[in-house]
View 1: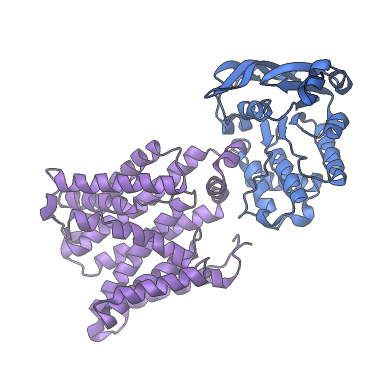
View 2: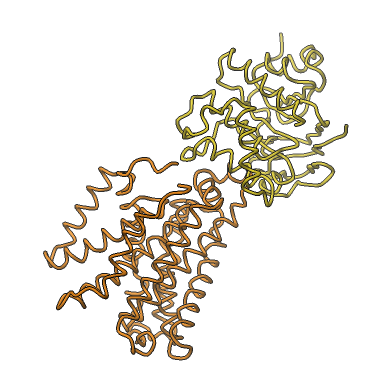
Length: 304
Length: 241
């Protein structure tokens, strides 16, 4: 993909950049809400893909999201919005280092199981620790004292831009080959001199930072966190379904997948209301059956 | 000339099986050493100890005078100890050129991209893979796979190269080409230790041969010396009654 053109990315981002200034009348607020979640969950999906490129299939992204959400939510009243978001991401990163250092030798499904256990432990902690609000939940202040209604939308956009920049960097630099070699065979990668442990830990750390930021922004939008919502396994699953749907191990795949899938989910919810998940699930299955390399697979072999 | 690689009394046991027992072995700079032996003699275990995929239960491994017994594989590669696998393990979703780039970029610490790219071109030429550089490694023929395996190890700029039955499965004509390639690699200044089942290949390539049986070194010398050794004949053919 060296020297690839960025036109698809620009076309993808442009509507979201313009959305707040479009004259949408009564639909404006609703569409901005949908846009917020599309941007945020796409960022989460991209952060999942960034980790998956090393063969670590994470089910812990719901937990990184939750760590970031609770970290930022608890700290925002004291330190302000942006520092709280960064500290939330740091908390998620600390979680990633703990998970990563006990799963160094695990790959693929085995890593997935370990990361699932990790997220169960964290949800339990969020329920039981004295300062999290437990099952009652945690109120979170809106960003920047609520003075600017579009703040959450732009924060969400920024997280996605950051995730995209990280992913593009990882794709264009030698890091891509280190990640790909690690995913395809750790033994071969090591014998070729790749510092596999370092590659896996860095990938997990970068992914957890983005997921943590996304979680922090999420709390500032919903203004309320509960352990079941913030640490939801459903979100971890969505984070991996989007890249599979859009096209794994690429930047464009999770981006296209996220925009299409999250929009679709919101639209179906609006049109069909109850039972919309049946249609959503059917579409997912069809795409995975007939487009094994995801939506961007239609564009042909991505090799350059 | 000097000893570039030395194994001092290495033993390895898997549960009940003594795979290697007090193995002593050395490799002289510039030579091609063959390690042969019947199935299960411990050849692949030896190679895994040398490349760091396994650790010995006892004994030491020295590389260029430095003890590497407990170094991980990537650190050994950085020092200049390269390895090609027996069962060809391409990184199937990468092209041939990208496979080589992995070795060229990470085989030594802090290699610049331009440098790595130039070196990969040279390795592609040396191994006759120029025409297939853009093919996905998963789409190669067996012969091309074997070449890629060699080329990728070479891309890490090894001083010593460990080859694990890289001729297995090749037709005689193809094996001949591969023998010529290994010679070219040696002539480029790389010391080689290889494991091989095909005796014609051993005879054609090896300056010196070490024979393993049940995890022990039972003979050492030139091809004709070990071929005439009664213990070696017994190991291969069974005791004549």
